[in-house]
Amino acid sequence: MNENNQTGIKTVNCPTCQKIVKWQEENIFRPFCSKKCQLIDFGEWANERHVIPVKEGPEDFNLDDLGIRDSTEGEF
Image (cartoon, rainbow, N blue to C red; front, side, top):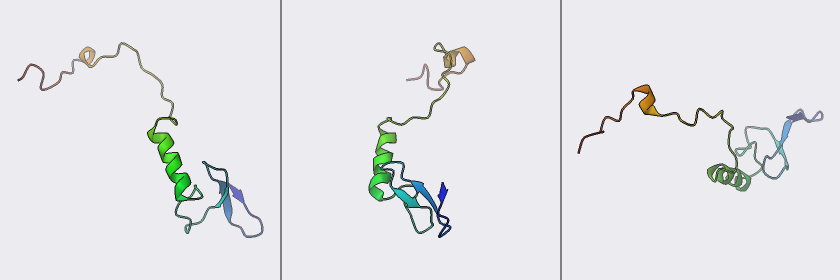
């Protein structure tokens, strides 16, 4: 966040288009500059182009190893 020394208003760059955005309550799309940029970002997350890295567990992890069983198993 940057602070404009003349007005005291903080600004950020829009994560989508890098346009400077005022960080104010009136800006309902912050940190985005517009609804369009907000939706573009949402689409990136929905299409899994953006992900939060996680530490993978063992490849052979299985619920059976924990003694957990599906309650419907064996029923018709």
